[in-house]
Amino acid sequence: MTICFLHNLFLQSPCNRKRQKKLMQIDLSFLQLSELTLVGLVVLISLYMGMAVRHVKLPALIGYMFVGVLFGPSVLNVLHETALEHLSFLAEVGLGFVAFTIGSELSLTSMKRLGVGIVTIIFAESFMALAVVTTALYFLTRDLPLAIIFGVMAPASAPAGTVAVIQECRARGSLTKALYAVVGFDDGLAVIIYGFGAALARNLLLAGTSAGSVSVVPGLVAAFLEICFSLALGGVLGLFFVQLLGRLKSSRDTFILFFGTVFLTTGIAIHFHLSLILANMMIGFVLANTRQGLLAEKVRQPLQEILPLVFILFFSLAGAHLDVKVLPAMGSIGVVYILGRTAGKIGGARLGATMGRVEEKIKKYLGLGLLSQAGVAIGLSLLIKNDFSQLAIQYDLPHAATIGAAALTTITATSVFFEIIGPICTRFALTKAEEIPLGEEK
Image (cartoon, rainbow, N blue to C red; front, side, top):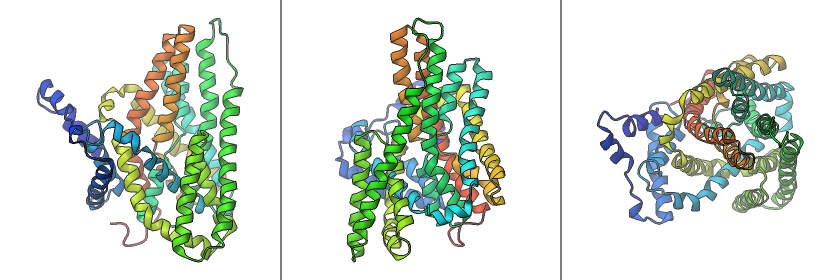
């Protein structure tokens, strides 16, 4: 809804093309506000915009993203590219807090209640999204390498949107637990799928050239090692965190220890090109499964207080990175990708839930909570663009460069759609499953 409004306002005005160009060239970067001023301004405006959208029963994060888009380079350019680059660490740390929250909800006791069904759901929804998108785009384009590339992008999700809605609504129940588990492990499997699919697409492009083919093994090994090292980093730091936490009495000191641990873990993960989501999630998982009761609750209580601010910063900055001008370039490939990924995620989750014999409400509504997509998918599409651009130059394959450019442009555009519709569908699913307490549905 928000993005459609911006699209109509700035791209499809009934005025002539000259007026459209002037509108698109609005640039307030000359104000030269300091980054601290920008953060304060965005936080205050986002707070009230979030309240406003909640009155029409939309998740508050839609309001935060609206402010980001409005202030970002694609509209007013108050949050210009340089400022966004300097503030990028806030989004990374915010994702670290989100990942820790996911892990802290994954106690082995609650996972056992969900049973093997959660594993079948994760595999089914990921591979169904891969299969549906690849098949649909192949029939549309008759271009198998392109179809595979878009297919391997489909399984990746954005846990921040789902977690933000759960936290905002204070949702509790089996569907909520299942959502935490699936969005937590989704991206790990997505990276492995990407490693295999990207290598396969390269093989198809190189077939018939002097290069012959390339092995899929290095890509799979690299993806597997990234996941293992990320979990190992989180596991080791998690054990240290739990040991230090047990010796603290003050809730103030507990919060400082937690805050520092998330910053440290996020920084190490970024430095060594590991998954900050998996690393921080593992710390929360270690806490949830080694120190039950009051000790774990000591961390969760201050976390609940800071998460609303984290979500404002994360989603307003995410909105600022969204470029509404790419929406018209989405084309038929983007539309088919959206429809295919949506059908694959929802249908796959239902199939996995049926195979795993989980309760009915998880079977019916889980897939709706898995639609958000942003950071990981855009990151993978950027890797594809860079990799295939080099491939085009090295082996004189202009089609490889075309696929890389199409992947980055289309995934960026479709992420705008999924970041808006995903949280709305998550809230709808939690409402239908009756896991939002009375008084929080407003």
